[in-house]
Length: 544
Image 1 (cartoon, helix red, strand yellow):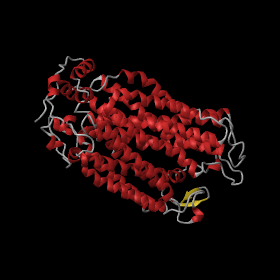
Image 2 (image 1 turned 135 degrees about the vertical axis):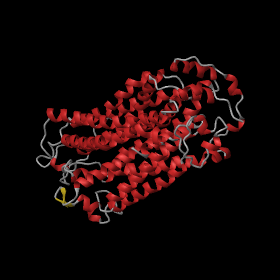
Image 3 (image 1 turned 90 degrees about the vertical axis):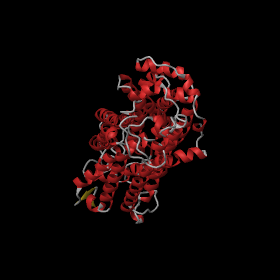
Image 4 (image 1 turned 180 degrees about the vertical axis):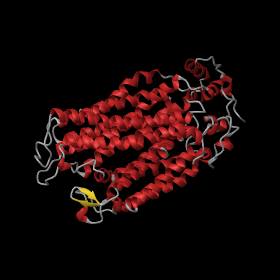
């Protein structure tokens, strides 16, 4: 039997776009700002760490992080994120979204500062403490994935829910630009204050001792936006859907949303007492699997496959930057100049392709739907990845000294940028949005956390598995510390295959555009078969 809808939930679904929606986007988006800031400031930071702590005069080359150290510095954050997604996703359904929301932000603040304060004067002590804080930073960032997505989906109205959740995720774009901008500004300031020759001119003098402050300042400044939004995050009321449908307190839900929406709402506690016991199934029970099993498989598999490809795109980033002249050979730069140039190259790619992709999604997602955006995103990512992979060496050109000659560099950079654009105007956004809409309120945060953790598992495979796979098949051309691989071209073809698989697994995910959360999850009972079955449904109703 269908449950009669609560007035407070109907009011949220039909609410006009108000100021509190925009404040919620900013407050919820700070975790993703910090996530992207950390992801995009680490490449220049690792360049400094390598020069400071791993310089070997016998090699005749600038210092760089050994493979095992590089894997540790980058990998612990991803492992922490995966763990945080599972733990805080589960906790958000048990204790409530708000009760644990501040914990994730404080973890980010403390660990961003702790990362910059990594103590010791030896490589071992600095990297060990840095990895410790980066794990817990990732843990806090991971918790923000299910909590922010769930909170925004439960606050939003039906008409613009997709755009609001996408806007929260698009805060990553500002984080990307901020991470690169801070690295550029800090490096420029230190370059002006402590000018140094290139490594070729003087290997020792090219890395000033003051460079040790550069990476620490860059990492610590990532805590500032999180600090500024902590108070407002604590002021947010618990979502009405958790309070009413999970905590079973319709009176409190109505009171909270009356203040937010500035309207009078009735409590209607009696409607909760009439709820059907058939909707009280638990995670991975037989009834859950029959109702949501294919949906969860779809959200997990598409996020997993996407993140393999997305986090692997840095495999050939160095070739792209070198080919178009954005990044000279390390020995032709000082340590601070290398930080500046790496950050500048990243910011150019972000501003030209990554950030526009986020906001095109925000603009169109409630007009053409999640399914179409995700499907076309995977399709074009597949097309452009194969377009890069098959003629890769022809596009890049042949090595001639420290650069590449006789290639098609304009085509090279355009194809590379388009893979990023359709990543973000595509599955990078939709894999985050859809898990926050499909599942019942009492399992929504948990299922989003499981889906997100599947994505981070793919990120680990992409960032590290393919790093080894992409090594040359000729031992003389393999990077120091790595075994032989299958070659970069074959690795990129495999990434194209991952994108193609993501296209087909998208067929398991139903369209959620224009449908209330309760209808999608089956919590109202009467429309479950039409909109929440495991089979994809592409019909978008004219009214909800």
